[in-house]
Structure formats: structure tokens, C-alpha cells
Image (tube, rainbow, N blue to C red; front, top):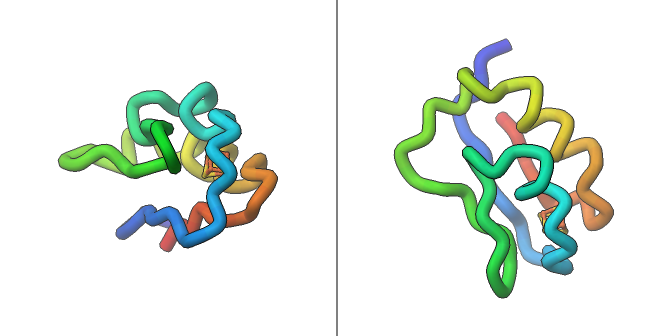
Length: 62
Ligand code: SF4
């Protein structure tokens, strides 16, 4: 199913996992952020993998 939004909830521990799985979408500094202007559907499988792998469970994909 197409991705409409990706966001990071509070609680990111800045482990870097999401950025290493999908650097086109996630940028981790103090906490992870979603880069602006990305076509999420180009990276759907990596985004879902990053969300599944996030140890804090704070990546919300809708
Ligand atoms: S994988 Fe989760 S906890 Fe780790 S940097 Fe990304 S959002 Fe934060």
C-alpha cells in the first residue's frame, strides 16, 4: 500500500539504524528526522524495513 506519511515520534535514541538502512529518507543528528521532499514510494521497502528495525519503535509509516 502506498505510503502517505513517515514521521518520527518522541523517544528516538539516535542509534543510526534508520539512516544506515535508508539514507535517502532518514537523517540522524540529535534525533532522527525525515528529509523533506522525498517520494516515499520510491523507497517503500527500505522505509518499512527501517521502521521494523527501529529499536525504539518510533518510526510511524502511514
Ligand atoms: S532507528 Fe529508531 S531509534 Fe534509531 S535513529 Fe532511527 S528513529 Fe531513532
